[in-house]
Image 1: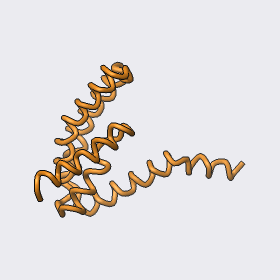
Image 2 (image 1 turned 60 degrees about the horizontal axis):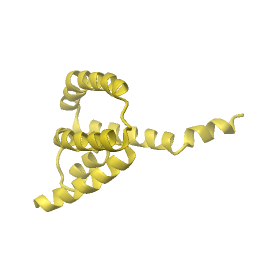
Image 3 (image 1 turned 180 degrees about the vertical axis):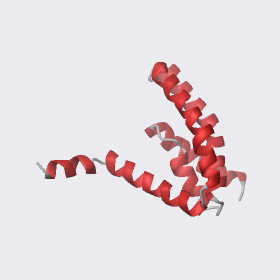
Image 4 (image 1 turned 90 degrees about the horizontal axis):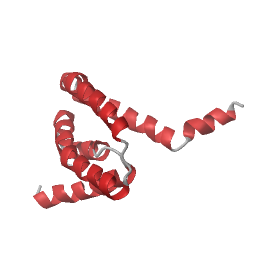
Length: 128
């Protein structure tokens, strides 16, 4: 693949990430696995490396242009994210079989997607 192909996906992921505040991994991991055929472990590590400059650029824009960053919340979440990622998530990703990573990631996307679309709230109203 050419650098232009990778950069094109990077632009698309950057736009969606900046628009919705989602981690690029939600889009980038499946793309790296299914478009370019890499193993999930490579896709996860590569996606994490890509998020660093994208996140820095996005947070600077949100902070300086729109004043939409709560640094107190960000500091607490960042501390937890560093501990969880470095000491739990990365070792687990390296230990689990590739198929388990794919399935777990898919389930996570579906559950959060249904929640954000309001499906669970709607189902809760049916029982009233």
